[in-house]
Image 1 (cartoon, chains in turn orange, purple):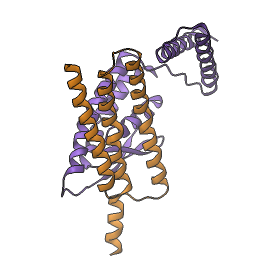
Image 2 (spheres, each protein chain N blue to C red):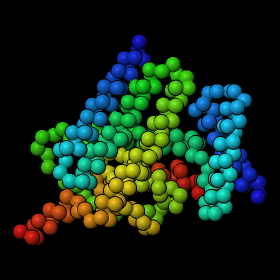
Image 3 (cartoon, one colour):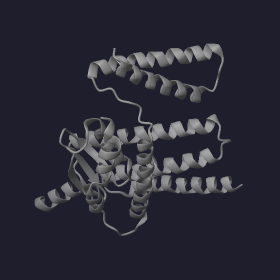
Image 4 (tube, helix red, strand yellow):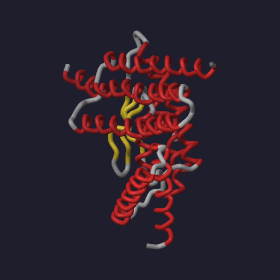
Length: 107
Length: 164
């Protein structure tokens, strides 16, 4: 009963952070800031949702598998973000500060 | 093959076997045989790669790694709240910042962990890494200053660096 309540809270807060990431993805102005918004969904939402799910198991092999999935998502998602950001950087996408400076000197 | 390599491979075999058992949960002879085969295949590949690049790496399962992971989750929580506030605030203008942080204090095999930790924490993103520096993009100047204060770098160098 108590576990279920805690699990509910974790799932709701996790869902809120996932929504935050999605909203930020639309709201933020340029590529790099959008990656930041998406990383909220990648990290904190994943952690909270998986913790919430683990509390709903019987703490058997299913829970262990959920822990594994959580660990591997946390290991791989920054790598994917980094790959995206690095190729954007090398492809010449300017950061917000850089493009602002350019506007000022141009205008 | 000396004893050091053997014990290194033995640790990996044990880790992988436990991992396989936890994933499968079956104890039928046929499936155990498949498990044994896949573990041995992975250890064989590992041994080949280690003798190629000369950088054997133990599975990071000790208490220090665990403590670091817990600390990192704490950091992720704190900075997530910051980023969430930025996302939902109405009129705060964003002032993202880019900075180069030195990597020279951090042992080679932990640089990836450092860059990954930076990226995992919302609000900071490692966008490039070379021999000397990691380039970090942050949503706020403040997060760059926190990284420059070196808390995370020190933790990685002291807590995880002993194994290099």
